[in-house]
Length: 212
Image (cartoon, rainbow, N blue to C red; front, top):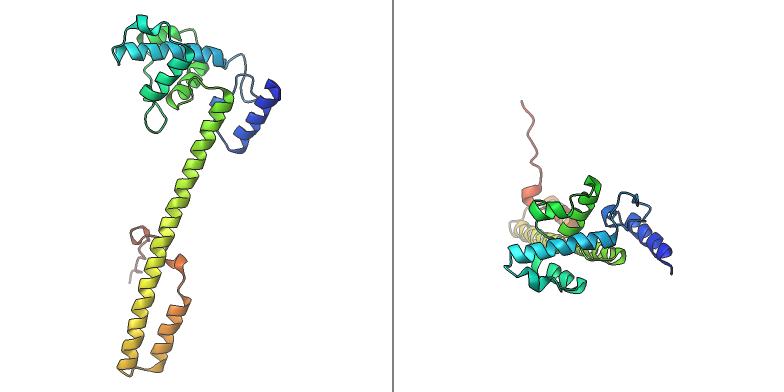
Protein backbone atom coordinates (compact mmCIF):
# COMPACT_ATOMS: atom_id res chain seq x y z
CA UNK A 1 0.00 0.00 0.00
CA UNK A 2 1.40 3.37 -0.99
CA UNK A 3 1.57 6.30 1.43
CA UNK A 4 -1.24 8.02 -0.46
CA UNK A 5 -3.46 4.92 -0.30
CA UNK A 6 -2.79 4.51 3.42
CA UNK A 7 -3.71 8.14 4.11
CA UNK A 8 -6.91 7.78 2.10
CA UNK A 9 -7.76 4.60 4.02
CA UNK A 10 -7.11 6.31 7.37
CA UNK A 11 -9.18 9.30 6.26
CA UNK A 12 -12.08 6.91 5.69
CA UNK A 13 -11.68 5.53 9.23
CA UNK A 14 -11.58 9.05 10.70
CA UNK A 15 -14.76 9.93 8.81
CA UNK A 16 -16.55 6.67 9.66
CA UNK A 17 -15.92 6.95 13.40
CA UNK A 18 -16.26 10.74 13.60
CA UNK A 19 -12.72 11.15 14.93
CA UNK A 20 -11.38 14.68 15.40
CA UNK A 21 -9.73 15.62 12.10
CA UNK A 22 -6.93 17.47 13.87
CA UNK A 23 -5.12 14.13 14.10
CA UNK A 24 -5.07 13.89 10.29
CA UNK A 25 -1.96 13.89 8.11
CA UNK A 26 -1.12 17.24 6.55
CA UNK A 27 -1.91 15.81 3.09
CA UNK A 28 -5.24 14.37 4.27
CA UNK A 29 -8.45 15.44 2.55
CA UNK A 30 -9.40 17.09 5.84
CA UNK A 31 -6.35 19.34 5.87
CA UNK A 32 -4.93 22.20 3.84
CA UNK A 33 -1.31 21.15 3.40
CA UNK A 34 -0.31 24.83 3.24
CA UNK A 35 -1.78 25.42 6.69
CA UNK A 36 -1.44 22.15 8.57
CA UNK A 37 2.00 21.48 10.07
CA UNK A 38 3.71 18.32 8.83
CA UNK A 39 4.45 15.47 11.24
CA UNK A 40 8.13 16.34 10.97
CA UNK A 41 7.50 19.92 12.10
CA UNK A 42 5.19 18.70 14.86
CA UNK A 43 7.92 16.36 16.09
CA UNK A 44 10.41 19.23 16.12
CA UNK A 45 8.10 21.35 18.28
CA UNK A 46 7.30 18.41 20.55
CA UNK A 47 11.00 17.66 21.02
CA UNK A 48 11.66 21.23 22.12
CA UNK A 49 8.71 21.19 24.55
CA UNK A 50 9.80 17.87 26.08
CA UNK A 51 13.31 19.19 26.70
CA UNK A 52 11.89 22.42 28.13
CA UNK A 53 9.62 20.50 30.56
CA UNK A 54 12.41 18.07 31.47
CA UNK A 55 14.67 20.96 32.46
CA UNK A 56 12.10 23.17 34.22
CA UNK A 57 9.85 20.60 35.88
CA UNK A 58 12.15 17.61 36.33
CA UNK A 59 15.35 19.58 36.98
CA UNK A 60 17.30 17.72 34.32
CA UNK A 61 20.39 19.18 32.63
CA UNK A 62 19.86 20.41 29.08
CA UNK A 63 23.27 19.08 28.08
CA UNK A 64 22.11 15.56 29.01
CA UNK A 65 19.02 15.96 26.81
CA UNK A 66 20.76 17.27 23.71
CA UNK A 67 21.76 13.80 22.56
CA UNK A 68 18.34 12.24 23.16
CA UNK A 69 16.87 10.52 20.15
CA UNK A 70 13.28 11.01 18.99
CA UNK A 71 12.50 7.62 20.52
CA UNK A 72 13.84 8.71 23.93
CA UNK A 73 11.93 11.99 23.76
CA UNK A 74 8.73 10.14 22.87
CA UNK A 75 9.28 7.70 25.75
CA UNK A 76 9.73 10.58 28.21
CA UNK A 77 6.55 12.24 26.90
CA UNK A 78 4.51 9.05 27.37
CA UNK A 79 5.97 7.98 30.71
CA UNK A 80 6.55 11.30 32.47
CA UNK A 81 4.29 13.92 30.90
CA UNK A 82 1.08 12.12 29.97
CA UNK A 83 -1.47 11.49 32.72
CA UNK A 84 -3.09 8.13 33.45
CA UNK A 85 -5.89 8.80 30.96
CA UNK A 86 -3.40 9.38 28.16
CA UNK A 87 -3.78 13.16 28.05
CA UNK A 88 -1.43 15.95 29.12
CA UNK A 89 -2.00 19.05 31.18
CA UNK A 90 -2.77 22.21 29.24
CA UNK A 91 0.44 23.51 27.74
CA UNK A 92 1.28 27.14 28.50
CA UNK A 93 2.62 28.69 25.30
CA UNK A 94 4.89 31.25 26.93
CA UNK A 95 8.59 32.03 27.11
CA UNK A 96 10.87 29.70 25.12
CA UNK A 97 7.95 27.55 23.97
CA UNK A 98 6.20 30.58 22.50
CA UNK A 99 9.47 31.54 20.80
CA UNK A 100 9.90 28.03 19.38
CA UNK A 101 6.52 28.00 17.66
CA UNK A 102 6.25 31.75 17.23
CA UNK A 103 6.28 31.57 13.44
CA UNK A 104 3.35 29.13 13.39
CA UNK A 105 -0.12 30.24 12.33
CA UNK A 106 -3.02 30.09 14.77
CA UNK A 107 -4.31 26.96 13.00
CA UNK A 108 -0.92 25.26 13.23
CA UNK A 109 -0.69 26.06 16.95
CA UNK A 110 -4.21 24.74 17.47
CA UNK A 111 -3.38 21.42 15.81
CA UNK A 112 -0.10 21.11 17.70
CA UNK A 113 -1.66 21.84 21.08
CA UNK A 114 -4.55 19.46 20.44
CA UNK A 115 -2.19 16.61 19.62
CA UNK A 116 0.18 17.41 22.49
CA UNK A 117 -2.57 17.63 25.10
CA UNK A 118 -4.40 14.52 23.87
CA UNK A 119 -1.49 12.12 23.73
CA UNK A 120 -0.84 12.23 19.98
CA UNK A 121 2.63 13.82 19.99
CA UNK A 122 5.47 11.86 18.34
CA UNK A 123 3.05 9.60 16.46
CA UNK A 124 2.31 8.74 12.86
CA UNK A 125 -1.13 9.21 11.33
CA UNK A 126 -1.77 5.45 11.65
CA UNK A 127 -0.78 5.47 15.32
CA UNK A 128 -2.99 8.47 16.02
CA UNK A 129 -5.96 6.70 14.44
CA UNK A 130 -5.16 3.56 16.49
CA UNK A 131 -5.13 5.60 19.72
CA UNK A 132 -8.41 7.29 18.82
CA UNK A 133 -10.07 3.96 18.01
CA UNK A 134 -8.85 2.43 21.28
CA UNK A 135 -10.44 5.31 23.18
CA UNK A 136 -13.71 4.89 21.31
CA UNK A 137 -13.72 1.17 22.16
CA UNK A 138 -13.00 1.93 25.83
CA UNK A 139 -15.81 4.49 25.98
CA UNK A 140 -18.27 2.08 24.37
CA UNK A 141 -17.16 -0.74 26.68
CA UNK A 142 -17.82 1.51 29.67
CA UNK A 143 -21.29 2.32 28.33
CA UNK A 144 -22.05 -1.39 27.90
CA UNK A 145 -20.76 -2.12 31.40
CA UNK A 146 -22.99 0.63 32.83
CA UNK A 147 -26.00 -0.77 30.99
CA UNK A 148 -25.27 -4.28 32.23
CA UNK A 149 -24.99 -2.96 35.77
CA UNK A 150 -28.30 -1.11 35.41
CA UNK A 151 -29.90 -4.28 34.08
CA UNK A 152 -28.62 -6.30 37.03
CA UNK A 153 -30.05 -3.74 39.46
CA UNK A 154 -33.34 -3.73 37.56
CA UNK A 155 -33.56 -7.54 37.68
CA UNK A 156 -32.98 -7.50 41.43
CA UNK A 157 -35.72 -4.90 41.83
CA UNK A 158 -38.06 -6.99 39.68
CA UNK A 159 -37.39 -10.09 41.77
CA UNK A 160 -38.01 -8.14 44.98
CA UNK A 161 -41.32 -6.74 43.76
CA UNK A 162 -42.47 -10.17 42.60
CA UNK A 163 -41.67 -11.57 46.04
CA UNK A 164 -43.66 -8.78 47.67
CA UNK A 165 -46.62 -9.55 45.39
CA UNK A 166 -46.36 -13.23 46.37
CA UNK A 167 -46.48 -12.21 50.04
CA UNK A 168 -49.57 -10.08 49.39
CA UNK A 169 -51.20 -12.96 47.50
CA UNK A 170 -50.50 -15.35 50.39
CA UNK A 171 -51.93 -12.81 52.81
CA UNK A 172 -55.06 -12.45 50.65
CA UNK A 173 -55.53 -16.21 50.69
CA UNK A 174 -54.98 -16.40 54.46
CA UNK A 175 -57.49 -13.65 55.18
CA UNK A 176 -60.04 -15.04 52.68
CA UNK A 177 -60.03 -11.85 50.63
CA UNK A 178 -61.90 -11.70 47.33
CA UNK A 179 -60.66 -13.89 44.46
CA UNK A 180 -60.68 -10.73 42.34
CA UNK A 181 -57.88 -9.25 44.47
CA UNK A 182 -55.83 -12.42 44.07
CA UNK A 183 -56.41 -12.31 40.31
CA UNK A 184 -55.29 -8.67 40.15
CA UNK A 185 -52.11 -9.45 42.12
CA UNK A 186 -51.26 -12.41 39.88
CA UNK A 187 -51.86 -10.27 36.80
CA UNK A 188 -49.52 -7.61 38.16
CA UNK A 189 -46.83 -10.19 38.85
CA UNK A 190 -47.12 -11.82 35.41
CA UNK A 191 -46.97 -8.51 33.57
CA UNK A 192 -44.00 -6.98 35.34
CA UNK A 193 -41.07 -6.32 32.98
CA UNK A 194 -37.44 -5.62 33.83
CA UNK A 195 -37.54 -2.47 31.66
CA UNK A 196 -39.88 -0.91 34.22
CA UNK A 197 -36.99 -0.88 36.70
CA UNK A 198 -34.17 0.39 34.49
CA UNK A 199 -34.26 4.01 35.69
CA UNK A 200 -32.93 4.62 39.20
CA UNK A 201 -35.53 6.02 41.57
CA UNK A 202 -33.65 9.27 41.97
CA UNK A 203 -33.85 9.91 38.22
CA UNK A 204 -37.57 9.27 37.87
CA UNK A 205 -39.60 12.37 37.31
CA UNK A 206 -42.13 13.08 39.98
CA UNK A 207 -45.66 13.33 38.73
CA UNK A 208 -47.17 16.62 39.79
CA UNK A 209 -50.70 16.46 41.11
CA UNK A 210 -53.12 18.69 39.22
CA UNK A 211 -54.18 21.84 41.00
CA UNK A 212 -57.75 21.93 42.27
